[in-house]
Structure formats: C-alpha cells, structure tokens
Length: 139
Image 1 (spheres, rainbow, N blue to C red):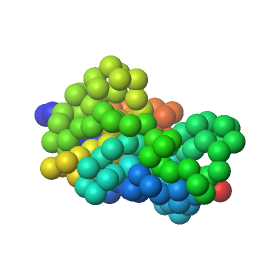
Image 2: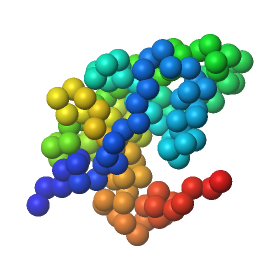
Image 3: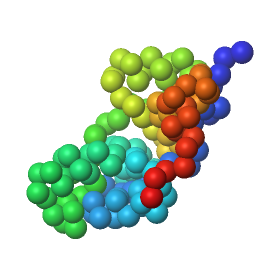
Image 4: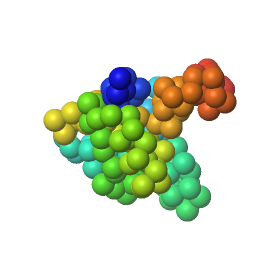
C-alpha cells in the first residue's frame, strides 16, 4: 500500500503574513512549540521561515526583529506538495531540493507541513530521529 503525505504530515500549518515582524514569528514559534512557520499572502504560500532563519539571517546580522518582516527573511517560493501525493514523492523532492520541510497545500492553501522528523516516524519509528521527533521539547 502506498503511504500518502497526509498519513505522515503534521496537520494544521502555522502561518503568518509576509509583513509580520520577526518578533511575531518567534512568539508564534514559542507559543506553538514549533520551529517553522509558513508565510502566506492570503491563501497563497509565498515562503517558509524557520527558527534557524530568524537566528542566522536576522539576529546574527544585527537586524531589528521588530522592524524586519517574515517576508524579508523567509525562504521564498518553497517546494510544495499535496496531501494526496505519495510519501516517496516527498522524499524525492526533499532530496532533490535539499530541504528538511515541505509545506503541504490543498487547493493552494496550506494544510500542514511534512518534515524529516515526520518521515522518520513514518518510515522507521524506532530510529533515533523518530524518537527525538516524538520527545517533548526542552523548556
């Protein structure tokens, strides 16, 4: 049986608009205990911003996190996948594009995110990555 992206993804992508400040992004990440946020203009996915993007592209560069937008720091035009795509297609896309997360879209709207951790839990639930992905976050 072919496993589908919807069987492995984390449903309910957290989103911000491109003009949201990095402070808003960081607060959303903190409050939802996540490391990535989809940047959407209306229903259209325009980017992905990760905790690493905030740190490396913004904080390390000395930018003001209140005045810099998510749209200015995010990875633009991310690789997208649909929930009904086979998981094998997602693996191929991640490998070919060297990405760790794929926003999952249905009718152009974000409905979830598929991460390497999700794939580890799906494909090898006893692997170290799967166990780390399941573990409660450090606080």
